[in-house]
Image (cartoon, rainbow, N blue to C red; front, side, top):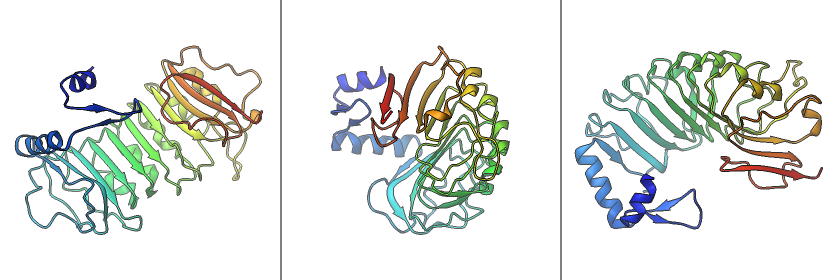
Length: 283
Protein backbone atom coordinates (compact mmCIF):
# COMPACT_ATOMS: atom_id res chain seq x y z
CA UNK A 1 0.00 0.00 0.00
CA UNK A 2 2.87 2.39 0.78
CA UNK A 3 4.37 1.80 -2.67
CA UNK A 4 1.00 2.41 -4.33
CA UNK A 5 0.59 5.68 -2.43
CA UNK A 6 4.09 6.84 -3.44
CA UNK A 7 3.38 6.00 -7.08
CA UNK A 8 0.12 7.94 -6.92
CA UNK A 9 2.06 10.97 -5.65
CA UNK A 10 4.66 10.54 -8.45
CA UNK A 11 7.40 9.98 -5.89
CA UNK A 12 8.00 6.49 -7.28
CA UNK A 13 7.69 5.25 -10.85
CA UNK A 14 6.68 1.72 -11.87
CA UNK A 15 8.75 -0.58 -14.08
CA UNK A 16 8.04 -3.56 -16.30
CA UNK A 17 8.37 -5.91 -13.32
CA UNK A 18 6.48 -5.96 -10.04
CA UNK A 19 9.71 -6.45 -8.08
CA UNK A 20 11.25 -3.07 -8.95
CA UNK A 21 10.42 0.63 -8.86
CA UNK A 22 12.32 3.72 -10.02
CA UNK A 23 12.73 7.19 -8.58
CA UNK A 24 13.30 10.45 -10.41
CA UNK A 25 16.78 11.93 -9.86
CA UNK A 26 15.42 15.09 -8.25
CA UNK A 27 13.20 13.14 -5.83
CA UNK A 28 16.15 10.88 -5.05
CA UNK A 29 18.41 13.85 -4.25
CA UNK A 30 15.80 15.45 -1.98
CA UNK A 31 15.12 12.14 -0.20
CA UNK A 32 18.84 11.60 0.45
CA UNK A 33 19.22 15.16 1.74
CA UNK A 34 16.28 14.83 4.15
CA UNK A 35 17.44 11.40 5.31
CA UNK A 36 20.99 12.60 5.96
CA UNK A 37 20.14 15.86 7.74
CA UNK A 38 17.18 14.68 9.83
CA UNK A 39 17.63 10.95 10.31
CA UNK A 40 21.40 10.34 10.40
CA UNK A 41 21.44 8.43 7.12
CA UNK A 42 24.68 8.34 5.09
CA UNK A 43 24.13 7.15 1.51
CA UNK A 44 27.03 6.91 -0.93
CA UNK A 45 25.64 4.10 -3.05
CA UNK A 46 26.46 3.34 -6.68
CA UNK A 47 29.15 5.99 -7.12
CA UNK A 48 32.09 3.66 -7.80
CA UNK A 49 33.90 4.09 -4.48
CA UNK A 50 36.98 1.91 -3.98
CA UNK A 51 38.67 3.65 -1.06
CA UNK A 52 36.97 3.77 2.31
CA UNK A 53 34.85 6.89 2.91
CA UNK A 54 35.66 6.79 6.63
CA UNK A 55 38.45 9.37 6.67
CA UNK A 56 36.60 11.75 9.01
CA UNK A 57 34.22 11.37 11.95
CA UNK A 58 31.07 12.50 10.12
CA UNK A 59 29.74 8.94 10.09
CA UNK A 60 30.00 8.37 13.85
CA UNK A 61 26.55 9.81 14.52
CA UNK A 62 24.89 7.87 11.70
CA UNK A 63 22.00 5.52 12.31
CA UNK A 64 22.07 4.07 8.77
CA UNK A 65 24.92 3.75 6.25
CA UNK A 66 24.54 2.56 2.66
CA UNK A 67 27.65 1.97 0.53
CA UNK A 68 26.07 -0.49 -1.91
CA UNK A 69 26.99 -0.41 -5.58
CA UNK A 70 30.65 0.21 -4.79
CA UNK A 71 33.67 -2.09 -4.62
CA UNK A 72 35.49 -1.00 -1.47
CA UNK A 73 39.04 -2.36 -1.46
CA UNK A 74 39.82 -1.48 2.17
CA UNK A 75 38.13 -1.09 5.54
CA UNK A 76 39.37 0.37 8.81
CA UNK A 77 40.22 -2.04 11.63
CA UNK A 78 37.12 -0.89 13.45
CA UNK A 79 34.35 1.70 13.38
CA UNK A 80 32.92 3.54 16.37
CA UNK A 81 29.28 4.04 15.43
CA UNK A 82 27.36 3.75 18.71
CA UNK A 83 23.99 4.67 17.13
CA UNK A 84 24.29 2.65 13.92
CA UNK A 85 21.36 0.30 13.26
CA UNK A 86 21.66 -0.42 9.51
CA UNK A 87 24.85 -1.05 7.53
CA UNK A 88 24.82 -1.93 3.81
CA UNK A 89 28.23 -2.64 2.25
CA UNK A 90 29.57 -3.88 -1.07
CA UNK A 91 33.22 -4.94 -1.07
CA UNK A 92 35.94 -6.13 -3.37
CA UNK A 93 35.77 -9.92 -3.56
CA UNK A 94 39.24 -10.40 -2.02
CA UNK A 95 38.81 -7.99 0.87
CA UNK A 96 38.96 -9.53 4.36
CA UNK A 97 36.65 -7.81 6.82
CA UNK A 98 38.78 -7.02 9.92
CA UNK A 99 37.91 -9.15 12.95
CA UNK A 100 37.20 -6.10 15.14
CA UNK A 101 35.35 -4.13 12.48
CA UNK A 102 31.91 -4.47 14.14
CA UNK A 103 32.94 -4.06 17.79
CA UNK A 104 31.95 -0.36 17.89
CA UNK A 105 28.47 -1.06 16.49
CA UNK A 106 26.64 -2.35 19.57
CA UNK A 107 23.20 -1.28 18.31
CA UNK A 108 23.37 -2.73 14.80
CA UNK A 109 20.19 -4.56 13.76
CA UNK A 110 20.57 -4.93 9.98
CA UNK A 111 23.72 -5.93 8.09
CA UNK A 112 23.88 -6.53 4.34
CA UNK A 113 27.23 -7.45 2.85
CA UNK A 114 27.99 -8.14 -0.82
CA UNK A 115 31.40 -9.61 -1.67
CA UNK A 116 34.42 -9.82 0.60
CA UNK A 117 35.53 -12.46 3.09
CA UNK A 118 33.92 -12.57 6.53
CA UNK A 119 34.41 -14.63 9.67
CA UNK A 120 31.09 -14.84 11.51
CA UNK A 121 33.06 -14.78 14.76
CA UNK A 122 33.43 -11.02 14.24
CA UNK A 123 29.66 -10.67 14.76
CA UNK A 124 29.44 -12.53 18.08
CA UNK A 125 29.02 -9.26 20.03
CA UNK A 126 26.34 -7.95 17.64
CA UNK A 127 23.62 -9.55 19.72
CA UNK A 128 20.91 -7.09 18.60
CA UNK A 129 21.27 -8.17 14.96
CA UNK A 130 17.89 -9.12 13.47
CA UNK A 131 18.68 -9.25 9.75
CA UNK A 132 21.91 -10.65 8.27
CA UNK A 133 22.22 -10.89 4.48
CA UNK A 134 25.49 -12.08 2.92
CA UNK A 135 25.70 -12.30 -0.86
CA UNK A 136 28.62 -13.60 -2.95
CA UNK A 137 30.61 -13.54 0.26
CA UNK A 138 33.25 -16.04 1.37
CA UNK A 139 32.09 -16.71 4.89
CA UNK A 140 33.44 -19.03 7.56
CA UNK A 141 32.81 -19.94 11.19
CA UNK A 142 29.06 -20.25 10.59
CA UNK A 143 28.75 -21.96 13.97
CA UNK A 144 29.09 -18.47 15.53
CA UNK A 145 25.61 -17.62 14.21
CA UNK A 146 24.21 -19.38 17.28
CA UNK A 147 25.14 -16.27 19.31
CA UNK A 148 22.71 -14.09 17.33
CA UNK A 149 19.59 -15.11 19.21
CA UNK A 150 17.47 -12.20 17.92
CA UNK A 151 18.11 -13.05 14.26
CA UNK A 152 14.92 -13.14 12.18
CA UNK A 153 16.32 -12.97 8.64
CA UNK A 154 19.34 -15.02 7.52
CA UNK A 155 20.34 -14.76 3.87
CA UNK A 156 23.41 -16.59 2.56
CA UNK A 157 22.91 -16.13 -1.18
CA UNK A 158 25.53 -17.26 -3.70
CA UNK A 159 28.06 -17.91 -0.94
CA UNK A 160 29.96 -20.60 -2.80
CA UNK A 161 32.28 -21.43 0.11
CA UNK A 162 29.44 -22.88 2.21
CA UNK A 163 29.41 -26.68 2.11
CA UNK A 164 27.05 -27.37 5.00
CA UNK A 165 24.88 -25.57 7.51
CA UNK A 166 25.97 -26.13 11.11
CA UNK A 167 23.47 -27.92 13.31
CA UNK A 168 23.96 -25.20 15.93
CA UNK A 169 21.99 -22.59 13.94
CA UNK A 170 18.90 -24.54 14.96
CA UNK A 171 19.20 -22.53 18.18
CA UNK A 172 17.95 -19.42 16.31
CA UNK A 173 14.41 -19.67 17.65
CA UNK A 174 13.26 -16.31 16.22
CA UNK A 175 14.25 -17.07 12.62
CA UNK A 176 11.53 -16.14 10.10
CA UNK A 177 13.45 -16.35 6.79
CA UNK A 178 16.27 -18.63 5.63
CA UNK A 179 17.68 -18.10 2.13
CA UNK A 180 20.58 -20.20 0.79
CA UNK A 181 19.77 -19.66 -2.89
CA UNK A 182 22.75 -20.11 -5.20
CA UNK A 183 24.99 -21.85 -2.63
CA UNK A 184 26.19 -24.36 -5.20
CA UNK A 185 28.72 -25.89 -2.81
CA UNK A 186 26.06 -26.72 -0.21
CA UNK A 187 26.04 -30.48 0.25
CA UNK A 188 24.46 -30.95 3.63
CA UNK A 189 21.62 -29.53 5.67
CA UNK A 190 21.59 -31.54 8.91
CA UNK A 191 18.59 -33.77 9.50
CA UNK A 192 15.92 -32.21 11.77
CA UNK A 193 17.43 -28.72 11.38
CA UNK A 194 14.61 -27.14 9.36
CA UNK A 195 11.86 -28.39 11.63
CA UNK A 196 13.55 -26.70 14.61
CA UNK A 197 12.78 -23.26 13.14
CA UNK A 198 9.27 -23.18 14.57
CA UNK A 199 8.64 -19.55 13.53
CA UNK A 200 10.00 -19.92 9.98
CA UNK A 201 7.81 -18.20 7.36
CA UNK A 202 10.03 -18.26 4.25
CA UNK A 203 12.43 -21.00 3.11
CA UNK A 204 14.40 -20.35 -0.07
CA UNK A 205 16.79 -23.20 -0.75
CA UNK A 206 17.36 -23.31 -4.49
CA UNK A 207 18.96 -26.48 -5.85
CA UNK A 208 19.59 -28.94 -3.06
CA UNK A 209 18.97 -32.67 -2.97
CA UNK A 210 17.03 -33.69 0.11
CA UNK A 211 17.20 -37.16 1.63
CA UNK A 212 20.00 -39.68 1.66
CA UNK A 213 23.57 -39.27 2.85
CA UNK A 214 26.05 -36.64 1.83
CA UNK A 215 29.62 -37.30 0.70
CA UNK A 216 30.82 -37.58 4.32
CA UNK A 217 28.17 -40.09 5.30
CA UNK A 218 26.04 -37.65 7.30
CA UNK A 219 22.27 -37.63 6.94
CA UNK A 220 20.64 -34.81 4.97
CA UNK A 221 17.44 -32.97 5.82
CA UNK A 222 14.18 -34.46 4.64
CA UNK A 223 11.29 -32.84 2.82
CA UNK A 224 9.10 -34.29 5.58
CA UNK A 225 10.42 -31.57 7.88
CA UNK A 226 8.30 -29.03 5.98
CA UNK A 227 5.22 -30.68 7.48
CA UNK A 228 6.16 -29.40 10.93
CA UNK A 229 5.95 -25.77 9.74
CA UNK A 230 2.80 -23.81 8.98
CA UNK A 231 2.04 -20.78 6.79
CA UNK A 232 5.28 -21.21 4.88
CA UNK A 233 6.48 -19.68 1.61
CA UNK A 234 8.92 -22.04 -0.12
CA UNK A 235 11.26 -21.88 -3.11
CA UNK A 236 12.88 -25.23 -3.93
CA UNK A 237 14.67 -27.02 -6.74
CA UNK A 238 14.44 -30.79 -6.55
CA UNK A 239 16.82 -32.10 -9.24
CA UNK A 240 15.98 -35.78 -8.75
CA UNK A 241 12.66 -37.48 -8.18
CA UNK A 242 14.53 -39.88 -5.89
CA UNK A 243 14.86 -37.03 -3.38
CA UNK A 244 11.13 -37.20 -2.68
CA UNK A 245 10.02 -39.80 -0.10
CA UNK A 246 7.30 -42.09 -1.44
CA UNK A 247 4.93 -41.20 1.38
CA UNK A 248 5.60 -37.44 1.27
CA UNK A 249 2.84 -34.90 0.62
CA UNK A 250 3.54 -31.17 0.55
CA UNK A 251 1.70 -29.45 3.42
CA UNK A 252 -1.58 -27.82 2.41
CA UNK A 253 -0.64 -24.79 4.53
CA UNK A 254 1.99 -23.58 2.02
CA UNK A 255 1.13 -19.89 1.42
CA UNK A 256 3.29 -19.42 -1.65
CA UNK A 257 5.68 -21.73 -3.41
CA UNK A 258 7.86 -22.16 -6.46
CA UNK A 259 8.97 -25.76 -6.76
CA UNK A 260 11.12 -26.89 -9.67
CA UNK A 261 11.25 -30.64 -10.20
CA UNK A 262 13.66 -32.30 -12.61
CA UNK A 263 16.33 -30.68 -14.77
CA UNK A 264 17.43 -27.57 -12.83
CA UNK A 265 18.25 -25.70 -16.04
CA UNK A 266 14.67 -25.90 -17.27
CA UNK A 267 11.93 -23.67 -15.95
CA UNK A 268 11.88 -20.22 -14.42
CA UNK A 269 14.38 -19.06 -11.86
CA UNK A 270 13.50 -20.18 -8.35
CA UNK A 271 13.56 -16.76 -6.76
CA UNK A 272 11.16 -15.46 -4.15
CA UNK A 273 7.79 -17.17 -4.67
CA UNK A 274 5.16 -14.57 -5.59
CA UNK A 275 2.44 -17.13 -6.30
CA UNK A 276 1.86 -20.89 -6.33
CA UNK A 277 3.89 -22.45 -9.11
CA UNK A 278 5.24 -25.89 -9.97
CA UNK A 279 7.77 -26.23 -12.82
CA UNK A 280 8.58 -29.62 -14.34
CA UNK A 281 11.71 -30.04 -16.48
CA UNK A 282 13.15 -33.15 -18.11
CA UNK A 283 10.86 -35.49 -16.22
